[in-house]
Image (cartoon, rainbow, N blue to C red; front, side, top):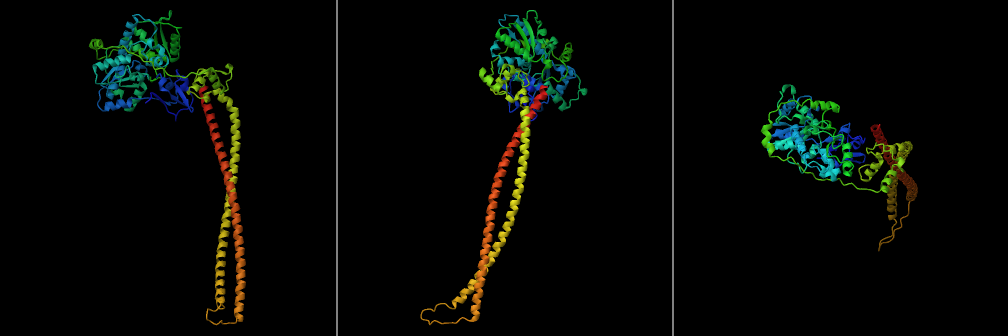
Length: 573
């Protein structure tokens, strides 16, 4: 399952996620966003930017519940930014997690303290090129995927999460280990080829809160419990700006810019570009994609940074632990906290200026003056957006000024289409009424034809009877057989009268039959003409229906464009 997915049914096509993504790894297909995971940092900025919640983060909570229900030994380690998410103390958080079935609960802050000491030792040696901190997994993703030339600048030191996980695995190798924190990128770090095997699941504070609510944990009935690690002391400030430096006993060198703290994805990218180009050569950069871990996308808070930082700082002197430093010394002595990195460059096609300008012209941009760089599409410049279109990551309809320029023409087209729609409807109604009238005529003529056929049958029967009479009379005057003497039987007056009567009847029947057949032929001719008329009307209706379908399709398209413009306009405003 991908780390972050988009619910297309709820997506409003506002491009807020594209604007928020620092590396523009969100592709737009048919107006809908899809995260291209090969370039994703896991920073979660798109999740924070989506105000309607159409972004979903992978949740390992069902897996944890399954392990716990099966009786698996599961250990939890909690990031030091927890005070910014939960309204209760660390001891109460331990009690809550224990009540859910966790066999042990540890502070990642303890691993952070060891991490800071590792940095202090490493920086105490000879550093030949700018060193970039690796405590933030999103920074690691940023360098591995988008600045692979700087892989050698990454500090080869485990993050606090990995250090704490290695300690826990060394003590309880059979247990499952779960990280609970503010960071989405930790999910990437847990399955990295160089770090896999230590963390079995990762959930955010938000996901943990939903779990607590679903389980209906009654905190008022619980007593505080101790952490299963030694006191971390100053390492609890790791999620606050410059926390690594404070814990390691180092200070930011503002005067010489030799040791600097860089926070925020865009500022990180600026600094990495400067280092890559050689324009900036510091000794050490403490780099975080979020503005301190307390501002991570998994934190449950709507408070500003200073309030969250104060909530974390308030826990510095709390000492409620079940394990001493001395107990872990033998374990720490046998562990290695160094790590490696692998370049995973994102392949991006390049294009000529001519190709980019051709794409720009398709949205009405013909000169540098037309490149207004409004960022409504989510890209910082029109040029970047045009390149994204060529790369298949964006669509020209994302350009708000281009769409707004289409409004007058679209409005005119919409009115024209509405008129055509009305005319087509009237034409169809007329054709339908005409067809009904023709059908009524055909039904009437079918009845007339049926009556004529019945009459013709009667005439035919009467004619047959007359014919039989004539044959019977004629047989009396037939030629004699061989050897017989002809008999001359004179016709009586009554016979002659009968023959005349039969002849008259035959003539009358013949006239009636002729008239009936003429009527039938006339009805058939009319039916044939009506049939041609129906065929022509059917053809006309098919043409009108086809036109109507085309008009309705165009009408829908115009409405969709209008809705898209309205959505973009709302977000842009």
